Image 1 (cartoon, rainbow, N blue to C red):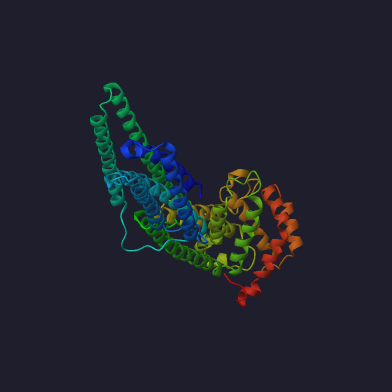
Image 2: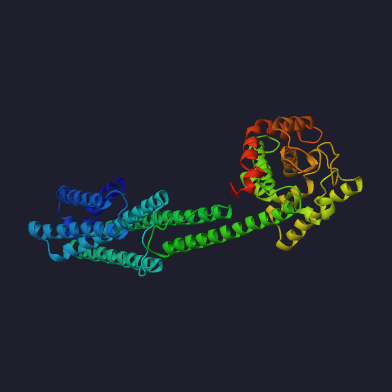
Length: 486
C-alpha cells in the first residue's frame, strides 16, 4: 500500500526532527541514536499496520473507513508511547519528555490516519460504483458537520499545543544557555517555521483528499441525474458512505425508481390507448387489426435499415425510431371521420366518394393536433401527426392532401407510404385478391422516384425478407385465431 508507506516515511523524518525541536532531552541525543530508535519502532509499527490492513481488506479491498482510522491511529499512538517508555528506561528521560513526544505523535498520527481513511473512502466509492453494490445505511451516524467541527477544533488545539511546547523548550534553553540574541532568534524562527510547514502540509493533504472524495460524490450524483434526464431510468447513484451523501444517494435512487415505475405505467397506458384508437379506426374499415401490427413492424424494419444512411441518420435516432414505431398504428385514425357508406363500400369509389376519402389525413392530423395542444409539446404526437397527415403523399408531388414533393414529406410519412402500400397489396380484400410478395415488390420498385422515396425503396429491397416474415407472423388468419400478441 503505497500511501501507507509514504506516510510512515514522511512521519519518520518529521518526528525525528520534531523530537529535537520540543524536547531538550532528545536534543541531547545524537541523530543516529534518536533516529535509529524511531526507525526501528516505525518499521515494527508499519509491519503490524500493513498486516492488519491487508487482513481487513479481504476480497473487496475496501474495509470500513472507521476501522481503518481507528487501526492506523491506535497503532501509531502505541509507537509514540513506546518511544516515551523506551527513552525513560534506557536514557532516564523524565515523563514530561515522553509527553512532549506523544503530542507530536498524536498530531502526525491523526493527520496520517485521516488521510489514509479518506484515501480508503475513495476506493470504496469507486468499488461501489463499479460493482453496483451499496453500503447498509444506519439510522445513527456522525454528520459531516460534526466531523468538520472536530477536525477544526483538533487542528487548532494541536497547533496551539505544539507551539506551547516549543515555547517552553526554547525558554528553558534560553535561561539555561544564555545564547546570543541573534542566534537565539534565528533558531526559534527556524523551529516555528518547521512546525508551521509540517502542520500546513498535513492539513493541506487532508483537505485535498477530502475535496477529491467530495468531487467523486458529486460526480456520481450529477452523472446519474444527467443519465436520467437523457432517458436512462436504470441509472443509480452508488451508496458508498454512512452520512449525508449516503442518504442523498439512497433518496435519489428511490426517486429514480419511483419515476421509472410511473413512466412505465404511463407508457403502458399510452401504448394501450394507441392500440385502442388504432383498432377503432381499423374496425370501421374493411381491413383488420393485424394491418396495424404489420405496418408498425414494416416501418420499424425500414427505420432500422435507414438509420445508417447519411440522409436519414440525424432524424432516425434510436429514440425517434421507438416513437415512430409506437405512433405508426395511428396512421389511419382519421378514417373514423369518414361515413360508413364510403369507408365500407366493397367496390371502387366514385370520384366524389374518393374526394371524401382523401379527407382522412386531414381528420387524423386535426385530431392529433388538438391532442397536442392539450398535452403540450410531445415528440410522440409530432410523429403520429406527421404519419397520419403525410402517408398518402407521393415523392413526385402527386399525392394528397397537400401534394408535397420529395424531402418536403417527413421521413416518417415516406416510410409509412411504402409500408402501407405493401400491406394493402398483399392483403386480401372483398374488392381484390391478395398479391404475392413478388408482385407487391415489383409495384413498389415501379413506384421508385415517383410514388416512393428512392432510398426508402432501396432499404425495402434490403429488408424484404423481414417484410415477408412479418406478413407471415402477423397474418389476418393468425390475428383472428389469436396466435399473435400485440
